[in-house]
Image 1 (spheres, rainbow, N blue to C red):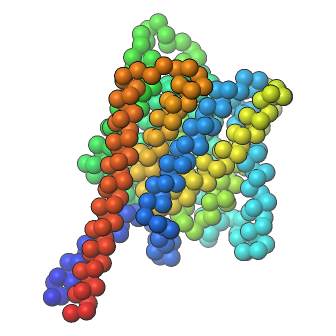
Image 2: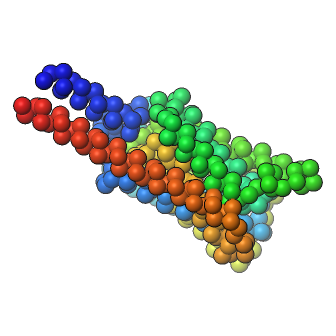
Image 3: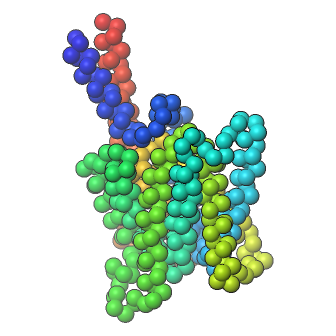
Length: 347
């Protein structure tokens, strides 16, 4: 009986580690989501909000991408500062974050804002589909970095999900650097866009891992406050040095404001989602964003869908279904292990 009990304890420990895989405090690790699939839902909502944010970037013409992002971060900072200040005086929230996390928070701010800025530059220099395609190469990068830095598992299923996601994204966006004539279309603007897209993928991957490392003990609003402050500071300095400041057109003021509102909402769901889901899983789930971008392009930019695009959408939805099934399977396996352990104790 003791051997069976020991085996069940090993199974339970292995299951728990595969779902959490985060070096955090015991109190943080033991925290449970409000309901099964809560982290997955937050990941999906975050992707939806980022999709609309990317569309707005293509709809603003009066200011540069750098100024767009600076404006977005400033709006986010103005929204979050009163919230954090209120939390500091009512709930004793430390603005420097949990003990030992201040440097990581600062790093998250600069790394995350740099990745977002590079995405804005990629969208400005490429088609929306091309830019999103390149940026979503972070699916593989995130899984590998999380495996190295956080000890998250990287199984054959994870590899399959990465391949399906990248394949689906490529089929939907049909980037010209893959499907088109590279020799005739690759100009300086496109090269800059491709480099910015690759940079966005790398910085985004590190951002997901850092947010995951910060854990549940770091409030989401505090996490995003550092991101917004870093983005506002750096990009305002860049706009000032390059002397590219312009007042947005009156008709686009609402779009600029919505950039900040959608941005802070997406970042909140991103942060909460990464507190309950593995970084690699989160990167795969965000692939839903390319499907939404594809639909928005059809509606607002009059892009006509192709059979390849439909096939790509099917692949991405398949990855989401696989992630959901695996999540449910792991949950049931953990519940069964707990049940067996409880029976052994009663005996």
